Each structure stands twice: as structure tokens, then as C-alpha cells.
Amino acid sequence: MASQTDVFIVGAGPVDKLAEVPKWGRADNISPRNMEIFSKPSLRLIGDELESISHKVSFMSSFENGVNMGNTPLADKTCRYKAMNTVQAQSTIQSVLEHRLRELGVLVERRSVVSDLKIDDNIVEREGHPVTLTVDRLAGEDDHIAETRCVQARYVIAADGARSSIRKMLGITFDAFDDGVGGEYHSASMDIKGKIDIPNFDKSLCIMKQEEWGTALVYPKNGLMKVGVMLNDDSKLPLDRSSPQEKVFEKLKNILHPFVLDIEEIKFYTTYTIKDLTASAFAVKNRVFLVGDSIHIQSPKTGQGLNLGFGDAYNLFWKLHLHHQGLAPSHILDTYSKERREVAKGVKVDAAAMTKVQGGAIATKGDSMGKQVLDAAKRTKRVSLGVAHGENAINSVGLAWNPVFPLLPGKRAPNGMLGREGDREVWLYDRLVIAYGIYVLIFVADPRSDPATIDSLKAINAHLKSPASFLNRFRMKERNIVNVLFVTKAKPLAELQELAFLKDYPVVVDETGVLHEQYGINERTKNGGVFVLRPDDVVGGAVLLEDFKVLEEYFDGFLISNVVESKVSKISTTTIFSFLSLFAVFLSIAYAFTQGHGDSWQSISTPFLDTLRSKATISFI
Figure 1: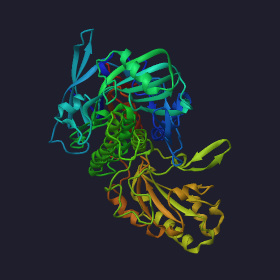
Figure 2: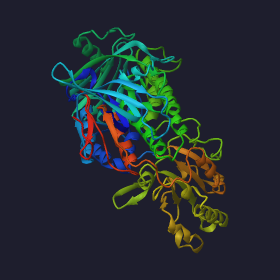
Figure 3: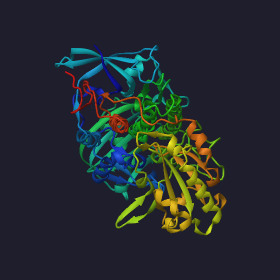
Figure 4: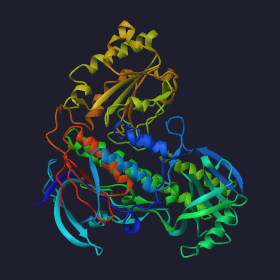
């Protein structure tokens, strides 16, 4: 008899089916944007630990023939984290995430595979389990099948990498991207213990270009440095993946000149072919969802694979949660594929441009090759600060946006610093304390001498307290789905008799006024504005105070009203995975799903793949 679970997560193990987590190499950096994600309430312990153990790389620098062509910061003032956080190896990040999982009662197993997947089109109700997976448990040195069983799931998340078996089972193709890179470029990657005399190297991601010798990428990480070398280019020493290491290091030495790399030890070395590949579909019937490298791949030099995987989890989990709880219609899930395809297109265009420039593409007239490399690198930086999505029911440009605001729906919401509490900086995201909640930010500047603004706030308060307001129409148990936060430049507003009602709401003070500036609050907006922030920190709408009620129609576009409690009694999740994005998927979805329900988990193990099993769950042999 088949067991049942709500979410079944499938992932890939380390590349080439290594039997244990590699100690060196692979994904070794986390972008400023993803550090923001890990600073959220449910993941804060992870963010704090990663922050404490990582090396901080703050700038991207471009060198041409030994001359610094310019530097660009890896983040800006709208992001709390100003650096790319680098560690020795993928396993370092994985151990931090795995430690947090153990604290949540989740253990790691190995050695199971999904050998078949079918979707029953006759099961259409939300509470059904239309996906049936055949799971084989392997044993012995020959990986023989020791046990086979079936699991029925409501949803499947496929994070099983570029060679995704789930994608293949579903007949989803993985094809070259238009104007992308189709395998004509090869690169070497290595982790080196040693020293290099590039100025300010300890804080820099350096893109090195020598006109005669080619390009390399170098950046520091705890006690080591990551080095990437483009092999086959238009230089005087073009190489390929079969070239001996001695030739690769000869090429590298000349690229770095006049700087000198003193190598003590090579910890990790590999070569790879650069390909831009994109899945023909990112989801099937809103029951199976691809994330991370199973969706698309591009040059690892851009550092986007791991970081995009985290972003996929962050985009998907809250939509899946709301729909599963009966709080959102199924079309909210359609936005995942649409938004993710927009991200894929933008990232891959930029990654391909950078790869081609590094390979020796002809520079634009008047531009040096070094400047072109830096410009391409700057474009890839945008993922570090959050990508922009197009219009849909959640990002409502047509309904819930006033052109007076430069911040478009679909863009990441700025995370400005509000002030300080003792020695600690306080940022806006710190005040978004409801995990996975939608927030309505109401900016009011200093309304004490502005009767019109006070009247608008009174009207907003009266509406919020009415049964017809989104605060009362969209709820789960005793918790709001939509939350309100007032942002002001003055304190304490509630002491003003006319604004005493603000004691009923959370209010934060923008002491420097920087946050008001970042959100475009000025005389043109009558010193006020209302912004909807999605659970993944993306702006959903931006309207003037007097247009506040339009948000009711906006929320009706993707939420289901008058839901007090979900019909689903418990959540269980079966997971099979190891790649880092899956840890984020699991942590996000697991935490979100259990907010309304129990902590019942099902799990299985997977070959060379890390698997989760809760101590509180039904366990399997």
C-alpha cells in the first residue's frame, strides 16, 4: 500500500555520484540578497552562522593588462549585507544548513532513488494526491535494489540538478538558449592555498584580462582562493579540457602578470564545458515544480546556480503554502513559472555576454576588453540584489500602482536602515516579524502638521477595522495573512490625540529618512504612500494614501477571502535531496506549512543524496 505525503522533494547528490560530501570546491559563495533571505525569522540562525564563518568579498574589480579598470560594489545601500560571503567549500554551507535541520528534528539519510513518476489527471481536488512515485532503496557496493515502495504526493519539487531525472521522466526537454553559449567554451576551476599580490585582494572578486593570454577570475575565501580560467579563447595559448594542468597554470601565470600567484597547495581542480540550457517547462499541472539547476544552467563563473536555487525556493514556498491552505486559487502557482522564466532569460543573457567577452569576443568600438568584462559582470550582479518580475496578478502594475512611485511592482523592496538600538543596526526587514506574511507598508513621513494626511490615516484605520478589510477577510486560524506596518519619520505619533489609534498597529520610525527616500516618498506623493510587500520581499503594489481601498480588489486577485481555518489537518513532507538549494526549499516549505498544522513528516533516503527524516515522523525501513 502506498504511503501519502503532501510535498515530496527530490534532489541530486554531489556531481559524479560521490559517496560523500566533497571537502573542497563547488558552490562556495552566498550573495548579499541570499544573506537577506537567511536573516528572516525562521532562518535567522542560519544567516547569523554563515555571517560569522564566511569571508567577505565587497567589490568586483576588473584588470586589463595589469591595470585596474574599475571597481563596483557587490551590493548597495538598499541591502543590509554589503558583501558576497565566501567559504572554503560547498560542504561548509551544507553543514550549517544541516545543523539547523537537526535542531528542527530532521536527520540526514542516504541512498534512495525515484525510478518512476506518474500524475493522475483524474485527481483534481486540492486535497488529493495525484502524483505517484516509485522509490527504490539501494544497498551494497553494487547499489542493488533492496526495497521498492510507492509514495503518493500532492506536490513534487524537483531540485535534482542539471541532469534531473524527474525532468526527463516528465518529458521536459533541456535545450540551448537563444544567443547563449552552446558548449563551445571550456573552463578550469580550482581551489588554491597560497598568496597573490593583487592590491586589496582580500576584499575583491577580480576579473583579470591579458590581451595576449586570456581571462581569469580570482577571489578569496577562508584560507584559500577560487581561480577560474577560460581555456579555449582567442589568446596565444588556447587550451581545452584535456590540456595538462601544467599548461593551464602557464596560461594562468601570464594572465595574472604582473601580479604573482604563489601556490602552496592545489586543493581542488576540475574542468568543465560551459553551456546555457533551459527547461522547456518549469512546472507540470501545478503539481510538479522544477527548481535550481533542473530549470537552467549557465556559466558557473557568474555564481548564480546556488544563489538562484535559494531564490527559487523563496519564490515558490509561500505560493504553495497559501494554495495548499485554501487561501489562494491555483493560478497563484502559475506565477512561479512565469516569474522564473523571466529570471532565467535575464541571467542567461548576462552570463552568455560575460562568457563570450572572456572568450575573446570583439569589444565594442571605443571600449576596452577589460571594461566590457566589468560591464558584463555588473549586469550579473543584479541577482545579488534581487531580480525584477513582470506584471501578473501579484505584481499589479495596472491595478495597484501609481506612476508617481518609481518603485515598480515586481522589484525587490528596498531594505533600508531605520536606525540603531545600542550597537545594533535596525533594518526594515527586521521589523517584518511575521514569518511568510504579506505586509502592507504605510509611509506617512511626519503627518502632525498635515491635516489631509491625518484625515487619510483616520480613513485607513476605519477601513482596516471593518469586516470588509483585507485584515479581516484573509486569515488562517488566529493569524493574519496580510499584516500592516506604519512607517513614519516622527515619534511617537500615537501621543497625538488624533492619531491615538496607531497604538493598535506596529509603527517603525525611519530616523534618517533614508527609507522614505528609497521608496520615493516626497512632495510628489504628498508625503505618503502604501506598498504591498510579498513574503519574498518583492513589491506587489504601490498606491497613494487616498487610494488605499484599491488594495481590496488587488488582494481579491490572488487570495481567497473569508477563510478562517484550512481544511487540511496536517502536513507531511517526504524529501530526497542533497544539493544546497533543497535545504532552503525544505526549510522554507517545512516551516511555512507547519505554521498552520502539525509537525508530521515522512521521509526516505536516497543514494548519494542527502535525505531528511524527522524524529517525530512515520519512519520507513
